[in-house]
Length: 147
Ligand SMILES: Nc1ncnc2c1ncn2[C@@H]1O[C@H](COP(=O)(O)OP(=O)(O)OP(=O)(O)O)[C@@H](O)[C@H]1O
Ligand SMILES: [Mg+2]
Image 1 (cartoon, rainbow, N blue to C red):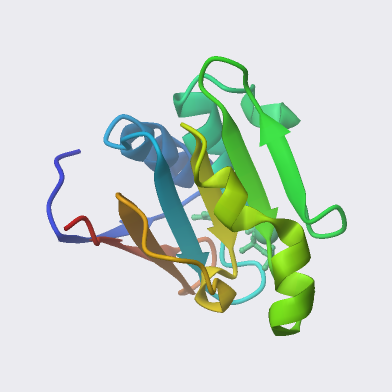
Image 2: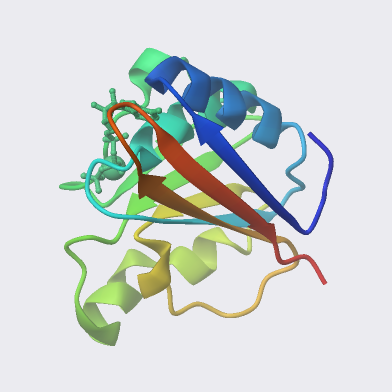
């Protein structure tokens, strides 16, 4: 996958979405911030499995939803933080997550419900919007917000 500024893909299975995550992982710089948006069940966590595995930070099956713990950490040499802001409300609670601090590390930070992210501008940023279509179809729009 090239670093176009905007790309739209329709996937037809979870496996296909995971594969897209692997491809996308190859285009990410470090540090970078990946913001995932889209309704419940649209496939955000599924895509993250591919992203994290594609970065070599964990196996697909070890990547699970951080909806209760809020942030998961994967990898050593290539560190990945995976956050889920669904339950996070208000800037105070948000601040306690320390996502801005994570972004100061040479890490990849992936955020579900990324529209709630209130952080500072970072060097590289990708915004991904996921939409439920019919059945197992998902429309995935990837916007590269690199300066
Ligand atoms: N093309 C597809 N891409 C991704 N997931 C799919 C696809 N087709 C079916 N699915 C199924 O949809 C569900 C997506 O769940 P997932 O946890 O990834 O969504 P989510 O957006 O992270 O939800 P939440 O907002 O609750 O965190 C899974 O059960 C997955 O198997
Ligand atoms: Mg999820």
